[in-house]
Structure formats: structure tokens, C-alpha cells
Length: 310
Image 1 (cartoon, rainbow, N blue to C red):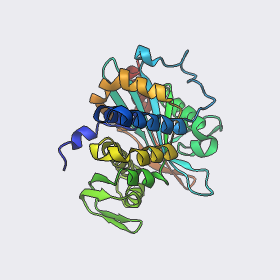
Image 2: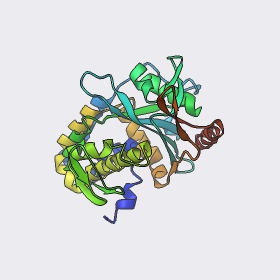
Image 3: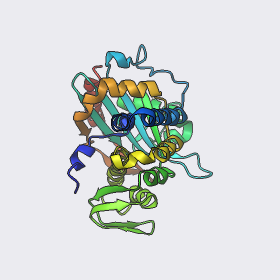
Image 4: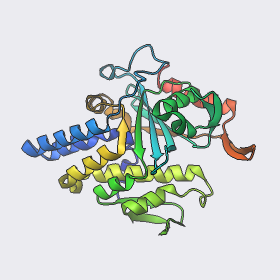
């Protein structure tokens, strides 16, 4: 295992802007200017404004220059040809620069909850299929009772392009399995784009179910960030930024990403994963759902609210 393995686990999706910082430190002059413009253009392509200017749970928008706590909904969306897509994975990050920490909650895709704007209860990952990013944000916000300020969406179907752009990824696999025509033994693995996609999709052979798949998806995302920020990838920045721009959508602007890097960087030194400690799967009318008891949901809400200083 590489020595920087533990450090790499502290990197998350919202820190994509750190790549350009490293590049500008290592490179210089016209090269640095070219990289800066390339990332700026990529972020322009990623930038996807939504009608929802701010959370209904906030009196005004987040002020990054005031170092206010904020939250991000990270979605891995499985969009295949002819399909509107579903949020294959949903992770909420709350960031507090004052206490210099990030809290991360993975929401099981089968979680039974009210779909805001639909008027029904259903699996939480259906919110994206019913009403896109905004319905997904509103539904997660209602479930957790906190403002959901921003989103970052990754197209998992085309994510292999990003993996290939950084020259493949190295992950640590804790479960031996086969899927999609590939075998994945335990231990450190080097994966191509197609292999990484298969690695991140397997669910039914994992005794942990959706939780196990979420772990593998985070392994892939973290490995991509690690490889993308490595010196060996600097000379391939054009392909990397093109792949990011084509496969990631966010309502964060380039300026906001830079402000996050400037004012919130220290928060990445302490990332705590919040675990759902009391939940269970059940079938209702023959359909599988994951149910979080009210008491457990209240506990999670309180942890996130305290972190966001609400």
C-alpha cells in the first residue's frame, strides 16, 4: 500500500479545485496560465445553474468570504442511453471551517422517505428520476432537516473517461468478487476505466449491499483525485479537464471553488464519516426499502445541525 494512502482518503469530490493549485505551484509562466484557463473552461462546462438560488432553510445565500458552514450533495448518477437516470449514490458533506472539520453521510439509495414535490413516499434515489437535481436536493434537505446548498453530480456511466484520463487508478479492495466480466481479488488493485466502472457497480454479491458499493465508489473517486493531483498527471491536464467537464455537473462556480480552497482548506484535515447505526431493510408491497427509525434520524439530524451551527 502506498505511504500516502491515508492522506488520500481525506480528499473528497468538492476539492477538485485543489488540482489547479498544485499545478500552478509546480508549473509556471505560460504553462501555469494555460492550465488555469483550461480548468476555468472545464468548470464553465461543469457549471449547471438551477432555479433554486438558495435553500429554503436559509435567509440568505452562503457567504464564503465570511467562512460560513455549508453543505454539498454529491451524487453519482447512473444515466444510460434512453434512461432519465437515478442517483446511484448520494453523499452529504457538511463543511465547518471554524472547527476545521467535514462530516460525511452516505444515504442508502433505497432509503424510504417523502419525495418532496411528488407527494409520495418512495426510495430516495427516485427523487432524481422524478424531478432531477432540484427534487433530489429538496428531498435530502427534508430528510436531514438541514440546508443543502450545493450539488456535485458525476455521471457514473461515463466516469471511465475520467479514470482513463488520469492513467488508471489504484484502489484497496476489501472483498474478493467478480462482476462485469472482471475478477477483483482482495488487496491493492490497478484499474482501467472499464474495470473501475464494474468495480464501483457491484452490489448483490456484497453482504453489505448498498453500503459496500458506496465504499467502492468512494475508493474510485478518491483514487481519481489522488492521481489527478499527482505530478505525473500534470502533462495530461487537457484530457483530465476535458473528462471532468464532460462528466461532472455542479452549481458551484469557478470563483466559488477558488473561495472554498482559500477559506475552507483546513477543514479537510478532519473528515468524519457519520454512520447510520440503526436502520434495516424491509419489504413493503413486495418492494425492498431501507428504513431509518425516527430516533436514529433525529440523532443524525442533530449531529449535522450542530456542525452547521444551526
